[in-house]
Amino acid sequence: MHDDIKKVAVQWFVKLRSADVTSADHHSHREWLLSSEVHQSIYDDVCTEWSGLDDIEDWARGELGQLNLARNTRVRHRATRWVAGFAMAATVVLGILIWPVLIDNGQHFQTVKSERRLVTLEDGSQLHLNTASAVAVSFEDGLREVTLSKGEGVFDVQHDSSRPFVVRAGGNSVIALGTRFSVEFRSANEIEITVLEGRVAIVPTQVSASSVIENYASGGGKFPEDAPALANLILGPDEQVIVGLEGQYEEVLEVNAANETAWLEGKLVFNATPLRQVAKELSRYVPGQIRVADGVPDDPVSGIFQIRNTEAMLDLLSHVVPITAVKQSSSVTVLHAVPMRSPGD
Image (cartoon, rainbow, N blue to C red):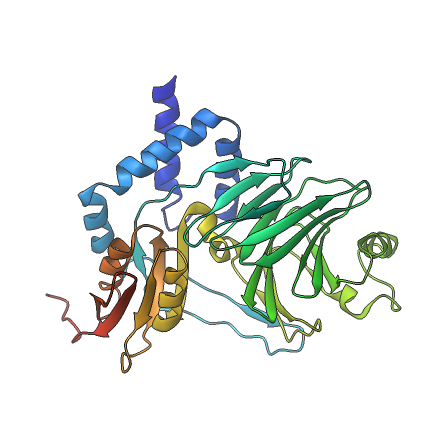
């Protein structure tokens, strides 16, 4: 029986690393993992075994420049529509482990730097905490409330019409009108909300979640004109917005939500992302800091990075852009420029 499960686990391992993987594939994979602890255990073993093989990294190097990550981002709400195309991208394959954690008697959950956790709440909803994140959970008869104080979380919400599910963060409330969304602190003053499935409404924290849902339902999916100002900010699948402390926002983007939350699968997806931003993002998932030396061009990086140790990620990053990593101390690695290599090198 375990041999059959391992075959399926290997199929998932390969599928999730293919260029044509879809959000539906990710959803099906999560359902398969959660259907059995044996599935999770064997899949983790496969990830460990395969990520350690030298020929996997050789294959990754051979695929550099072969993955075409198309990004079509359309701006709505007070912004000009635009579509950005991206150059050939680099595929980088590394290893990943995520461990499910059942809710305990406490109401506070957090992760340290480079750690991620999956928390199952008492109503069956699931909370995926990214690195260096913290939440407080409060469930009452008429309200399910999660307060995100730092970091990032993805929320898989079980429907319960009698108890709204609300995420409080940065002076705003994100109210679930559907099932799956993420909330991330971009800075001390801004949060980013991305919807994977269903819909969410974003309102000031002082607004009652129940009244928002009632107004939304009575309006047939819209809010009446006298509803709170932010109540008209409703996001659907593959939409994203950055909201400030005062509830201000400039634009709603159409994004690939699966790419935006690829860390759930142990991946980081970059689409022509400046090198310094990539270094900052990679630093979130390793114990130390990755910095870019002064004078190094902020070259765009495109590709799929799977989270592993610092050395492995930077080794393959050096095949995407002309940099070399120098360990400055036990906790700091600095990226320096190297001459551009010719295709034959």
